[in-house]
Amino acid sequence: MQIPIDGFVTVLLKNIFIYAALLLSFPAFCQYEQLPGLIRQADSALLQKNYAKFYDFASQAQTLYPYSSQLLYKLGQAAALTGRPGEAINCLRKAIVIRVGYDLENNTNLVSMKSRDDFNELVGYQAELKKSIIHSDTAFIIRDRQLHTEGITYCKDLKSFFVGSIHKRKIVRIDSSGKEIDFTPEGENGMTAVFGIKADNKRGLLWVCTSPLKEMKDYDSTLSSNVMKYDIRTGKHLATYTAPYDYKIYNFGDMILDKAGNGYVSDSRNSILLTVNDKSKKLEKFFGSAIFLDIEGIAFSEDEKYLFISDYTKGLFRLDMKTKKLEAIKCNLPAATNGIDGLYMYKNSLIAIQNGVVPARVTRFFLDGSLQEIVKFEIIDRDHPAFGEPTLGVVVGKEFYYIANSQWGGYTEDHQIKQNKDLADIIVLKVNLEK
Image (tube, rainbow, N blue to C red; front, side, top):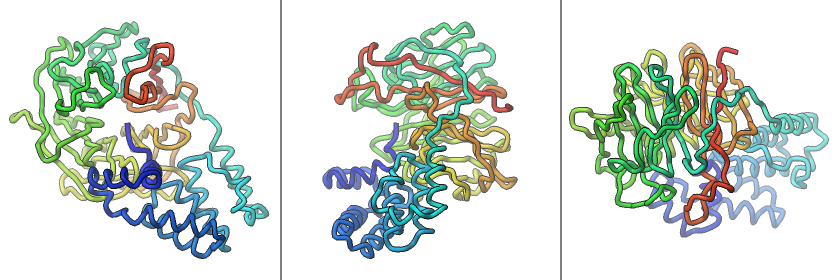
């Protein structure tokens, strides 16, 4: 679960007190303190039909926060109203790639664009973006509708998938026949909501990262975020690794293992990476950067020289594991690289589960030889009929499996799970990456 890409902008406008709370909770947002005023000034100028000022304020806001489709759409209108059609097309195209539903045809601010061929081409492109793309089939169905699973992994020896439950605070094993078996009891050893989960097939281990959320059963705010280690065959709990006291609250989103079995965890709350210290049974800060706003998925390059990191708001980054040099992944293609939850490496390409864009999609980004730039992309699935909120997945040989409809929308306003009749079976989709 993440703050939507445009959610921060919306919150700023709706409630200044919420904005103040965000600044206290997320220090990185302090640099955006001018944003609400700029947006209000832009909207006021538009109402007064002072299009020059509308453009000026919209441009300043979009420069300050260039990741928002709302601000791109606003700037596109301002550019159209001030005789900048090329800039308008560029902004509007970027906006609809992130969030397809913006009105192009009936917006009176875009009337001057309607006679242009490039604008009509953009309208046609928007229609294409709204179409579903389906390459995945159902792998299996989990019938426990209140499980609310986020992460998934696979054990080759047991021929079983393992999924973690956000709501029920447990791990469930799905064997080759599709039978669901509790791997752990609910809340065992202080287990909270389960996010990333990884099988170490070589060493027979199962790693789990957990964080307390109000959506879980018997929520207790005093519980901590932890990483847990299990014997994957017996279910025996082997260790719990606690977070450092650098931050009061953590939200562990995903976990990855290197070939030596070392574990790394992404913390979306503080936008840092942590590593597991097996000797001290503690988690230690591995890397952080003021550049990040909300990191989620992580994936190693095949030689493990680089760690790819998805910032939910800003897009894709590459971290040199030896030098700790951080670089943004370049992309000059008409593709959104933000809104990525799960991230996976497969043969010089990154598989990205994007639930922070509209429509939700799974995209394969092909990298150049230096792993610095996206040179091609393919949509694996877009607006799949099984989608609720797709979250995390796992590569198994040539196939990619992922959770299609995590139940983040399956709660009441007071964080209580809905009844079975108001929920859907959980669907795991699969696709052959070689086709």
